[in-house]
Length: 75
Image 1 (tube, rainbow, N blue to C red):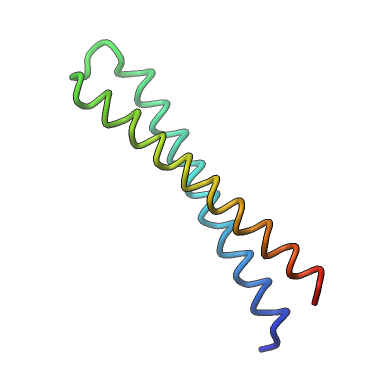
Image 2 (image 1 turned 60 degrees about the vertical axis):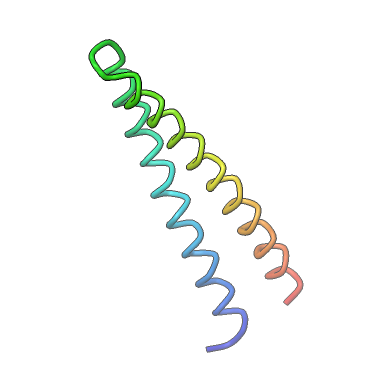
């Protein structure tokens, strides 16, 4: 496998995890909206923390992905 193919596979893997992360955030926000009145305060806080952590994870993955795309242009 050539270097360019390896880079493309790594970019695909990053795109996959960004998609999984976005779906997770959507699910967590949906749960928050549906259970806002009935859920315990701890569950709500953990939900907000989870959304925040996943959002940071998406930002990091996006930065890595963009850097890899830039490197792919140079090959």
